[in-house]
Image 1: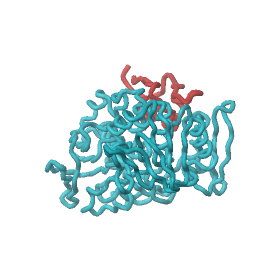
Image 2 (image 1 turned 90 degrees about the vertical axis):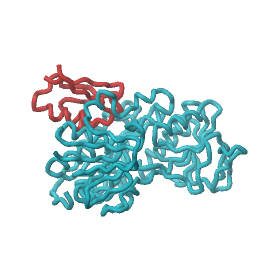
Image 3 (image 1 turned 120 degrees about the vertical axis):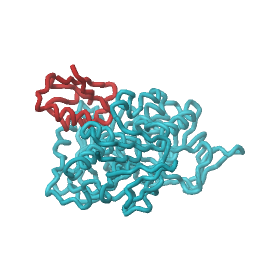
Image 4 (image 1 turned 30 degrees about the horizontal axis):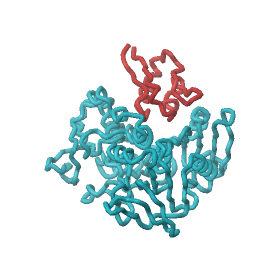
Length: 393
Length: 65
C-alpha cells in the first residue's frame, strides 16, 4: 500500500487528501498541520468572518461529514521540521517520524511583515485567529490604517467601512492593481473605494509606527512626511512561502517550491497551492499562484499524478475578489502589454474586460459579470501539448 | 442513481463547475449555479464528479437517491 504524507492542512493539502480518498482509497494518507484543527477556508476571513456576518464554523474547510469521509491519519497541532530525503521520512516537531512513498508540500505562505516589527494593534490576516483579532478592533469610531492596496488590503478596507471604521490605505505603488487588473478596472476599483470613503494614499509607504505609552499603535509616519492617526492597522503587503523545513533536501526553494510541469519538485516530492512554483507548459514559464481555485485544481492534479500517469498541470489561472456589492473575477493572466477593451453588460450594471496579446485572447475580467464571462473563459483553456516527459516523477 | 444537491447559498460564482460540466451546470443572471440538466446521463456523471470536486466552496453535493 502506497503511503502519502501531506504537510499542510489548509485548502490545498486537504483537497489532496480528499482527492486521494475519492480516487485511490487504498492509499495510506497522513495529513500534518501546525494549527490545532484543520484550517478554515481563507476567502471569507477578510469578508464575512471579519464582518461578523458568519460564525467561524461556516468557514470550515471540512464540515464534520466530509472530515469523516477523509479516512486520513491526522497529525494536527504539530509542524514538520525537516525531511530525510534518502530515508523517505518527514520529521515532526514532536519527534515523530512519518515514512512516505510520496510527500506533498502544502505548507502555504505566511504574511510578510514590515521591517522594524509590528507593535500591538498592528495586524496581519491569514488565519481565523487573525481575522477575529482584527475584527475586534473594527467598528464605529475605529480608524483603520491598511498598509498595502492589494486585493487583501482593499477587501479588508471594504469590510472595515461596512463596520463604520474610517479607513486610510497606504500603498507604495503609484498605480496600485494596474499590473493585476489592467488600467481601466484598477481605476474603477479605486474609484469605488473612494466613493465609499476610503482614503487611498498611492505612492506612499509607512516609515514607522507611532505608539502610545501602553505600546499600542496610534498612527504612522509616512514616506512623504505626513502622519496618519489610527486605532488599529493591518499589514497586507504580500506573503512569504513556508519552505524552511525543506532546507536539507534537494528541492529548489527559490520563491516557493520549484516544480516541473507535473508539480513534482524531486522524485516522489510534490507541491500544491500557494507554496508551489511550477512550470506551466501552456504559458511556458513558472508560476506561483496564491489564489483559492488553484489550490483545489492543483491538488486534484497532484493526487492524480501520484496515483496515475503524470499529466502536465496547465490550468487557466482564475481568481475573484469582493468589494462592497462588486465581485471582480479574472481568468487568464493580464500583462501590461496586452490590449484592454471594455464593454458594459447587464444594462450597465456590470462590465466585461477582455485582454488581447498579439491578436490572441489572454485574459477576461468580469465586474459583476460572472455569467457573461463564461463563453470567453472557455476560449482561454489550455491544452497540454506537446506532452513533455516527466523530469522527476 | 446518484443525485445532485446544490448548496447555492455558498456559491461564489467561480464558474468552475460550468467549465467542467457545461451540459449540467450553468450560472444564472446573478452568477449563481443552476442545474440545467435535471437527470444527467450516465456518461455525464464523471464530469459532474469533477465539477463537485473542483468547486472551491463545495456547493455541489452528490448523494444517493
